[in-house]
Image (cartoon, rainbow, N blue to C red; front, side):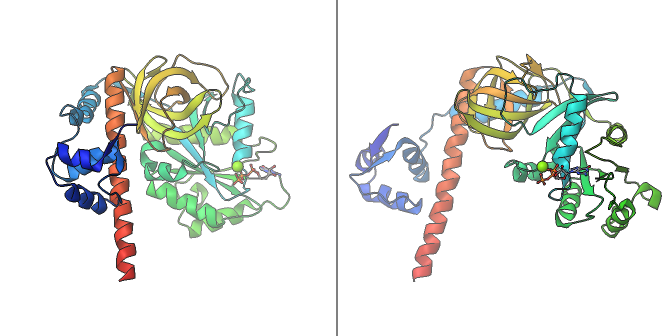
Length: 370
Ligand code: GTP
Ligand code: MG
């Protein structure tokens, strides 16, 4: 990109070179008068020195974006629940999801798309349910921070032959932090060593009280191997969702969150997003964290290419300028110019906070040496 020497920048700002060097040092950047600094660093040090380097309109981009989002209004309608599957290692979360997919996804096999998608929606007799598979998700930490926003119901899977284990407790904590109701799936009920009563007793110690113990937590005995009880589990989830009366505006510009992202050799940046409101359409312009772009294609978990995705529906988005971070928000905007402007402005802000952070740690190093 563009670079400028410290001396040239100082001249433009009508300052002494040494003053710019000092300001750079404060930001954690070591540079002499004759050295070049990149464009973003130049912008930041200029602001640090009390000058305005970015175009005046630039600061308005985020405001314009917020105004757009705020102005979006429409009738909220019922939306599918977003369900996160959690639990201790090897208790059968993936097996459960595999079973549900195999038996409930009409189109079955993911045609040609081998890329893992950690979120998918299934059609059940009670309606659509969207599932998030927590293990292996780099996104999980960011998702936890947004827990309540993203997850409506947490299904805690507990193996009936193993009982409550450390990650079972973690899952319960997470559900509580997210303020999301729990449905317990007592799995591996087909095993001779299965002891569902022990599981319920152990959960009681965690203040997760089964209905037959006088509490209000639905606990369903299932086998991800044989499929036993899985319809009952789906019913329990639907029942829990009905109680929540989940709603979203499905008209208008889409907004949501990135669940996971990657750089695909052939397809470029790929983001799996969860649409939370509005409808995401092919051809839409969007800002996604510090990235922007135009939706070139949408993929669902079966490899199909839907033209659009509404509230609670996870979908892969192709066409972004770069790989966004898991947990980033996305929002559809009117045109590419605004999308680009907001994204770039965010990038500058992000660098700024990184520089401040690195300057901080540098100062700590210096202090430590004194
Ligand atoms: P992590 O993702 O590593 O946390 O594990 P997980 O919870 O996804 O467990 P996974 O589905 O990989 O299952 C672990 C093992 O348990 C596998 O060998 C499964 O075949 C087995 N398993 C899962 N569900 C059942 C079940 O209902 N009955 C029996 N007998 N085995 C099961
Ligand atoms: Mg798994």
